[in-house]
Length: 382
Image (cartoon, rainbow, N blue to C red):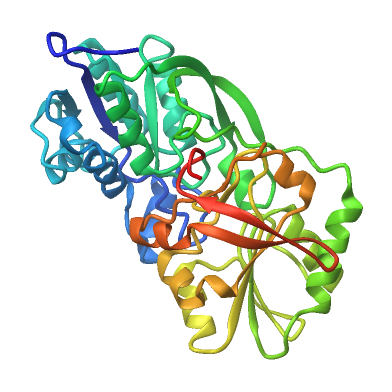
């Protein structure tokens, strides 16, 4: 997939403004007007417009020769404007967009002649594009949701811009069919993952920049996870707040402590007791104050994300409050092997913080077993 100066690439820009709004406040999604209203009531700040702006800014000079089409207001126009791009407005967004508006805008942009549709959203938005666009044109997702199990997203906003820049500069970028997963948000909020194949979209293929589909299989060596949990419990410090992240590995830690666990949320424990359950970013900061605190996290099997996928409760403010040396990663060697040598990834929503988090991190992979593993911004970094 290449382009030349005589036939510049026409890129459609589409934003789901409310994508991911419930993540940092512990709602684990953004589907539905009631959920969005509750997220705003809890102090959530929409991030999708800003994340699309970051992707567009990452193009740099490569953006100038491209032709840009977008939708009005927060559904694309504002991101283009903030990135300094002159974009043609194909249609206007309503005051509060719903799924049908994303589908309508996507279909209109395709009809207007875009060669590629760059969109910001989560799995729900990807599902809408399957319905509205199918495999008629390539699409590329800027990650902005809470649940991004689908394989249509760049690993972070800047990676989306860099991939487009490669295409603009004549790089040979192949196309592949990528899986879109459909997640039941209501079940997700109750600690149950119900994911199914929904459809496929065509995406530009570049392994450094695209995330993998989430690997949801349970590891065969359950004993390894049990040993990790035993080591963590043996090394817990008195009078320290522990922020226990989501995932089955952390669930085993809580089980061995004899404590209830929010499988897909963040719990806070101290001195062997639950202090707060299923908390959002602001509640975390209020709870721990200036007291000693640590985070216990695992990674998403197959994808390798450490921050930014399903754990937005660990906001940039929370991560900075803790400090890198107070974040402990738990992952068996088998789980890390599913990454096939790719690094762990960070996508916190703060580009400067993401850069600071890169490097070698200790990973607890068994009882008294620690190894070093690389954290990077994209899968191609050395």
